[in-house]
Amino acid sequence: MAVELRPLQALRLWHDIHLDLVRDGEPDLSARQIAILLTIYLDTPPHTVRGLAGRLGVTKPVITRALDTLGRMELVARRRDESDRRNVIVQRTVKGALAVERLGDLVVAKARTVPR
Image 1 (spheres, rainbow, N blue to C red):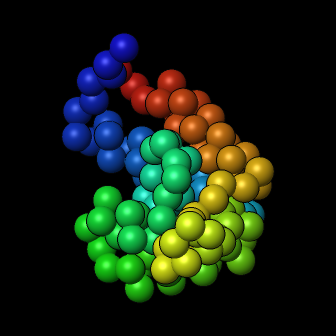
Image 2 (image 1 turned 30 degrees about the vertical axis):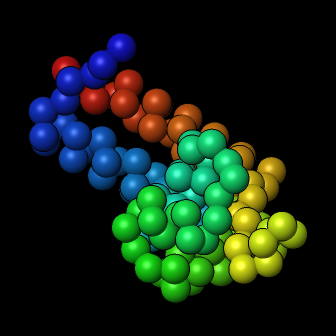
């Protein structure tokens, strides 16, 4: 079911979601970190640093820096690909899955409050 929003409604929704994220007491994630996290959890694995860089149109060092932060927060984990040691596999974690689920719940709840 498609939901049609006017630009100001969409911006209000985006604002309200981010405001709740700022207020929730959890560490803040940048837009880039959220994009990487959602790509890892919404796209079919496996995920590699090289693949994420290509998918998001950024460099591997950009992905690596974001993954450093996401890894410290235990939202993702990394390991070397045993079949090709040059590749780094990015894995989902339980904590990350719960964070993405909470974000999805927040978006749904906030979308329900958008005036039509």
